[in-house]
Length: 125
Image 1 (cartoon, one colour):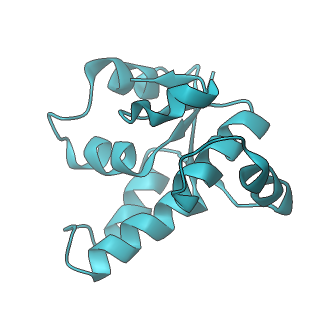
Image 2: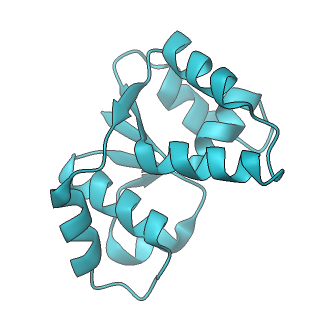
């Protein structure tokens, strides 16, 4: 399975947070699964860190992702077009892009946020 990590999932997983579910951790640790992190999540985490809302230096984030063989998922024009066209009341642009990426890239979205269930994204937690 291909797993796309939501921003909070990336942070909680790398920080070893007890808020990160055992099931999600097991999915990530299962080497059969490919783990991806979107440019959207990197942007969100770095933005929050620069605003003092997270204690996660950019260099540490990137090093941890490399150590764990996490794949980068860039945002493409197709992702953006799909995100705009989603029939979904949720207006958070980052969540819309993650939903589009999960669908177009055939990924399960690792996220605590049940808002994705409304549009049938394969959410794992």
